Image 1 (tube, rainbow, N blue to C red):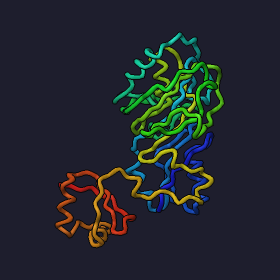
Image 2: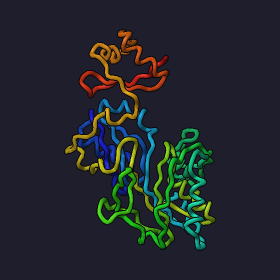
Image 3: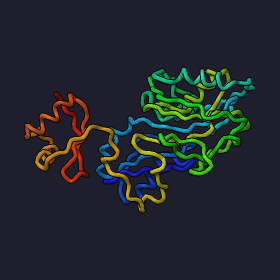
Image 4: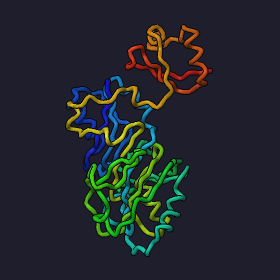
Length: 311
């Protein structure tokens, strides 16, 4: 079954997108590979039918974002949902000061997730506890920020660019032509940083906005977020959720960033049946990968089975 790359619109949850996809594609077997908040837009990868078995290998893919961080106001949700619970004047900051602060966030670090998130503690969702007035204590967890680049500093959110296009390296940059993004309504006139970030699984950009503000000595919130990449998929490949039934989708093979071995029909049949490879010559190639995940490609180049090969 194909994999669909959706451009999630503003104000829909990831579950809303899955529900629409189920109706359009007439199947209950739809899963996504990484939640996007309602106020975020961009790449949401959907696995359908038999391809749902690949979600476990894709949900930890690296992701890339364009993030608008507004300085001078903090909210309980850490984004533009609001309301503003803390505000402060923003001192004059130089590009060098901001750049130095951002550098400290690159690499592995401990990050405290947002109170308004779907994380569970003792079977209780964090957002449910926060809404009830008894927020949970969420422990910091290890995340990785691989790249964090300052694209611009603007007097207010309205001054920041909304139209972007990918450069030769696939990074999305402000452009006169390209894709124009819709951001949530602003909470006020606040100085805004535009960041490009490539992060590992489990990283919250809302928490990053909070922490960047703290490093600069001011409250801050995430005033806009666009996911431009998820794993091997780019926003340029995405289709509107209401046009899924008109899209051919992407192949399963295109989704996995794994070493691949072309299997003979006999080996492919054995693997689908859960058997050990009977062809010792093929097996010799498999065992050299020493415990790594491997995508075994069937003879037709489409169907595949993911296995763990041990030396």
